[in-house]
Amino acid sequence: MSYEILDLDTNRNYKLNDISSLNNCVKNNNIKNIKILKTPNFIENEFLYNCRKLESIDLSPLSNVTKIGDCFLEKCHKLESIDLSGLSNVTKIGGWFLMNCSNLTNIDLSPLSNVTEIGSWFLYGCHHLKSIDLSPLSNVTKIRDYCLYNCYNLKSINSRGLEWFYHEKKEEYQINYDEMIYDEMLPRRKEFMKEYGLAWELMAAVWNPANFHKFKYLDPDTFADI
Image (cartoon, rainbow, N blue to C red):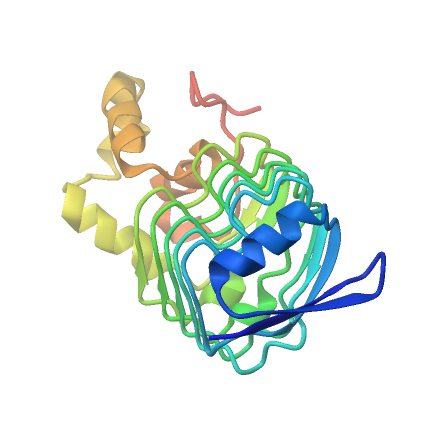
């Protein structure tokens, strides 16, 4: 497998034979802004894992990619900008996708409209995200747990098209949404959320399945309107 990258600050091109060489190259050369020119059709696990100085990444040339492995750009704490526009043919995303990219303030998921399966911990710990549009993921038929978990600054989420996900989990956890509107059910709510793992804000929308594309922000401790 081979990779080719461009350091956008120095205009220097690198060709690497494997994922380990790629990651070491980015780390050892202190690359901050990068364009990925070539990857295999399947992006291996730990792609640019823990590249803590990386600030921006352009993936626009990667129209050949159909699958992304685990730990994609995980722990790139300084990452502020990511262009996913080349990933329009991706159908499967592994776990820990952009996990703990805590400096991201915005992410456009619209290129991922062909994705059908997403692993655990999707966008976990992206603390600076304030809004996100999940509607491009309407073709997804399987999402594992801890999606958006610990994204505690989220104020708005568009989840239109993902209604099936909540109904599926309703059956799995045997949740009675009518009961969950009462304050005496608060401990059960918290227990469910802790195990289930979605962000407090996203889970708040579940209590009214008929309207959960309309985001409503609730205080995570009291569930009172803010």
